[in-house]
Image (cartoon, rainbow, N blue to C red; front, top):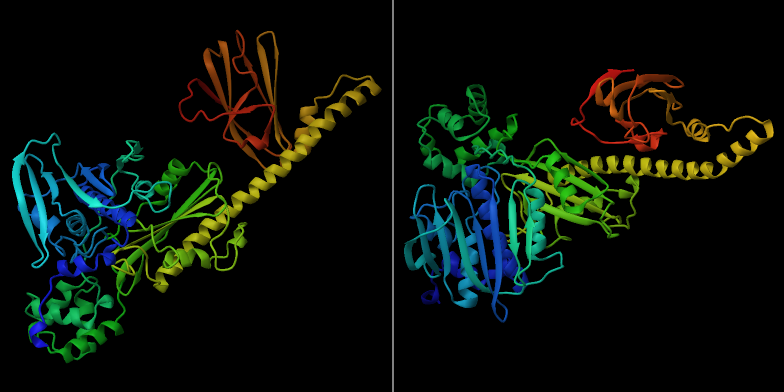
Length: 599
C-alpha cells in the first residue's frame, strides 16, 4: 500500500473538488468567475486610491460556452507577478495581512482560471499595465501537478488604458437572469455596497446595464495591524516564536503583537513566570502554553479599528435610495467589536415602500463588501434577521421566517477575518458576538421604521378626517352665512383650526400685501416664506422671510410690490406639507436668491 502514496498539489485537489470553491453547477460557476475577477478589481483599486471603472462583458460562444471579460482601471500588476497571481493557487498578498479585504486566501481568481481550463481546455488571457509601463499580454494555464503557472504565450502589446488589468476566460456555464442568483443581481448588489464604483455590464443578449457611481470619495483604505494576543492560538504562537527577529521575550511581545507596550509586556511575563530576557526562539511548547495562559489572564485593549473599512450609514442610505427608490430608508453603522481577537463591525440598512412592491422582504447579505447570493438559510446573518421580532416594529412575521413587507433589509459584516462556513464564501458562521451586533443594528433600524409607519398612519387618518371636513364645512359655512345674513366665513381657516395646522393667507390692495400666519397647532413652528412678483418686492424679484410663530399666535408680514404675483399662494419651506394650509410647500434649498427678512 505504501507504494501507492503520493503527494498531491492544492491545484490538483481543487481540480477534483471544484464544488468547494463555488463551481458546483453551471450557473453558479459563471457567477463565481465574474465575482472573483470583480472582487480582485475592487480590492486593487481601493488599495491604490483609484475610483473603480469596471467593465464586465459576457459573450455566448457556443452551446453553454461563454467568454467572460472583466476589465478595470486599477494600478495594474507587475510583469513578473502576473503568471503566479493568475496561475498559482494560494498565491497572493493578503493572506498574512491582518486587515479587511475581499480576497484572503489567494485562491479566487486562479480558481477561475483553473475552472476555465477544466471545462474548455483553453488558456486564460491576461493583459495588465502599470502607470508609465508597457502592457503585457499573457496566455496562462495551470500545471495542476505542481500548482505552477504554464505560460502558453507572452508578448508586449499596445493597450489604450494608462493602467489597469483585463482578464478574458472561456468557460462552460449557464447564464440566467431575473433571478436572485444571477450575474446581474451580483453586480447590482455589489454596486450597493461599493457606491464609489462604476460598473458596466454587457449581457450575452447585448443589453447594457450601467451601475453608476454615486460618490466620488473612495473609501479610506484599511491599515494592516499585528496579531492581537487574545486571538492567537498555540500553534501560530510557537511558529512566531521560532521565526521572530527579536532577541528577548520582552521585545518579542512588543514588536509582534498589537496593544502590548512596556507595562503590559512586563505584566504578561510576570504572569507567565518566564524570563523577560529569554531568547524567544529557545522557548519550548510548555513555555508557549504559559505565555498563552498569561495572555488570557491579562486585560488588554481591543485591537485598533483602522484595519476596517466600513461603507458608512450615509452611503448605505444613498445606495438603497438609488437602487430601490423607497419611500423610507434608514441605516446604521455599529461601533467595532472583537471576536477571538478579530476586529469586526456590523452595518445594517432598511428601505421600505415606494417602488418596492414584493410582499416578502428582500435580504441583502454582505461580508467585506462581497454579496452573499447563496446559502441564505444557512447563514448567521439570515438567522439574526429572523431572530428579531419584527411584529414589534409593525411588520408581519411568521415563526422562524423572514418578515413580510415591501422592504429591503441590508446587513454587512466587515472584519479582518470573516468566519465563512466554506472556501466559497457564501455564508457566515454563527459567531455569537456577530449575531448579537446584527440584532442590535436591525432593532435600531426597526425602531426608526416603526416611527415612520406610525407617523404615516397618523397622517393618513388626519387626511381622511380633513377630506370629510372639506365635504361638510363649506356647506355648513354657506348655509349659516345665508341664515345670519353675514359674509361667508373662510372655511379653509376653520378646517385648519380644527386640524391643528398653520394657516397662511395673503391679501392685496393697491400694491400692498399682507401675509397672515396663524398657528393653530400646539407647538412652535419655524419656517421660511417666499413671495415672487414680476415687478419686484422691495427691489427684488424674490423676497423671503424667516418666520417663528408660537401656538395660537398670529404673525403678519407686510410688503409693497409691483406687477403680478408669480406664485398663486405663498411658498413655504422647512415645514411638512401635512402641517400647512393656504400655502404651497417647496424645496428651494440654498439656491433661492433675493432679500431676506425675519418676522
